[in-house]
Amino acid sequence: MTSTTTLLETVTADGGRTILDAATREPIGDAPVHTVADLDRAVAAARAAQPAWEALGHAERSRILHAIADDIEANAEELAVLLSREQGKPLNGPNARFEVGACAAWTRAAADTPLEPEVVFEAGDSRAEVHYDALGVVGAIGPWNWPMMIAIWQVAPSLRMGNAVVVKPSEHTPLSVLALVEVLQRHLPGGVLSIVVGDREVGAAMASHEGFDKIMFTGSTATGRRIVEASAGSLARLTLELGGNDAGIVLPGTNVAAIAENLFWGIFINTGQTCAALKRLYVHESQYDEVVDALAGLAAQMPMGNGLDEGNVLGPLQNQQQLDVVTRLVDDARARGARIVTGGRPATQHGPLFYETTIVADIDDGAPLVDEEQFGPAVPVIRYADVDDAVRRANASQQGLGASVWSDDVEAAAAVARRIQAGTVWINQHGAINPMVPFGGIKASGYGQEFGVAGLKAVAAPKVIQR
Ligand code: NAD
Image (cartoon, rainbow, N blue to C red):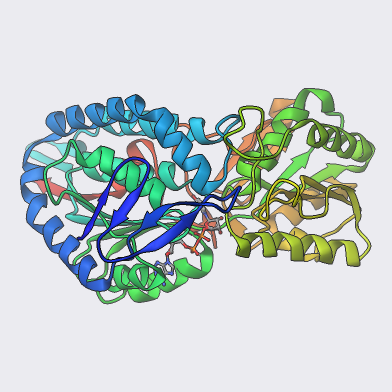
């Protein structure tokens, strides 16, 4: 490959793509645009390097992962600044500094999670054990919303289990992942981790490539379906973390002031560009106005603007296509008579890709803002009269990534949570993640789990030894 990277810029010998600052639209640097031939070279290098990497053993690979986490922490501020500029998320709030911190934390968790052989049957002289070996070469295809953190979610467990990895970042956020991968590569033998910075065509070529044993994919449901089709030939194993349209249900009698801030950040984390953000909020009619007012009050208090300004906690949309989606959905809601409580317009005073923090009330299921994934700073708040009906509407979606139930009565909330179809149902929070707690979707939000023991097994080949 003909590119060299430093932490803050990418220099390509053979041209490349200029990447713009999401807030100011000024150039930040150039990213290479690799080809399918570059992908073939990366896969060949990975296949050549993988056996020796696997042979190093868990203890040595874990030591290396801790050295990587130390190095991420040593470069945290520089990485966070680049991430903030390219992705748009502010340094502060649950945003860029948080994301870089999570990269170190998830790397350490991948290093430290034990995965011993399991004895699954024993009787007399008979005994069956399950061992977890490396799969071989893992392809990691990622999105643009949490580009560094999701790359680490895919890469760190794969490396821990003895796999080599080829990463393909989103074409919208290559510089952040290039910088992160450069930090990792300092500690790894050549070929064990490569990055291919291609367009969607390179992603498609990865999905059908015979050289991958596993594809870890995070992105949209539409692309996930293409990957399933494309991998039929190679039979690569798949983990698919796809889109979400997470419902939240506020039960009657809830202390609204106590939950308001958690509710706000469950919705607006990363300015709404989060797979498992709360994307449609069902509130009992007895507290509807109170919840709407509380969210609007918080929206007015949370500063939006350039992410490098320490005061800001909300940023721009990362790209024009996503701004267009949010604009279309909110304009449609307005046109069908919903009430725009606050926001509802582009916030061009901050830059071309900003959109106001938007609360939409008096809206119902069937409106595209409720039924589709908005992936931005606009939330529909839907009135309900009967909890059973709210559960039915929450479950009516094709998606099943996350959901949440909000109540002072945690046991009552847990009982409702049991009835909701989602990979995770949070209580009095939404989107909270923990490196030891499995995470993944059901229905059209994908399959397979990441994190913890389940995440290690997802990048391993189970092998039974029986006597
Ligand atoms: P996307 O599907 O457009 O792109 C994701 C990646 O797939 C990119 O790297 C892209 O280049 C690549 N790609 C495109 N076409 C491909 C193909 N045919 N084969 C293989 N790869 C291909 O998604 P996006 O717009 O980057 O991300 C936003 C979506 O991701 C949202 O729907 C969001 O909910 C979802 N998401 C899910 C999770 C999760 O954990 N479930 C996390 C973050 C984002």
